[in-house]
Length: 213
Image 1: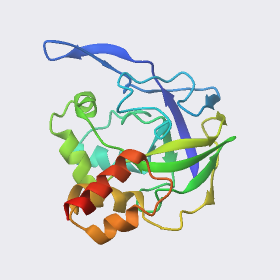
Image 2: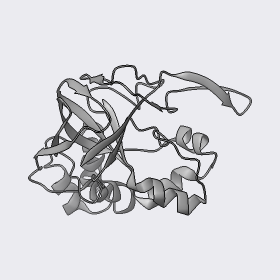
Image 3: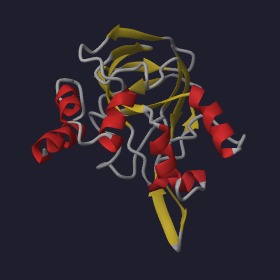
Image 4: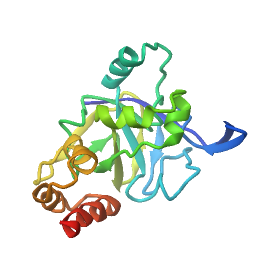
């Protein structure tokens, strides 16, 4: 597993409909090593702190392998690192293989997977496809967020090492599918709630599934 690119951006205003939109989704690669801290990646920022950043979403990871899929699916060849708003473009960390709760060493930092990424209208706007949120969800190629257990510097070409696999063993893809496409599955929701490292918002969603049943 490898960190291919580290991407950051401060929030900026872009044209949107009849006005402007403040967003930090336009990430660009950084050539130097960057400090990964508990709440954020150095040099990076988010416009909407309710939806992005913070303790359980300090950095967003997206597999580089998906670039080829989307290039073929959308018939485009204009993608650059950070295309999907990710801080870390990685190799060898597909959502079907990475578990929510897994712990990894990336460069000098130690991190834990907390949840799949929830796409929003800003991703659709950046891609220039109004319906892209639905397309992105249906593909179940979400990427995932990290919380920082130990701060440290990270940089392109760093190796990524699995330190501890979560004992529940639910992949990012399984958790994402459960919430969006199988959200009456009480038994799987109970299983998901056993993941200690899961972000509180997702835990609340699975508790709601059980309460509704």
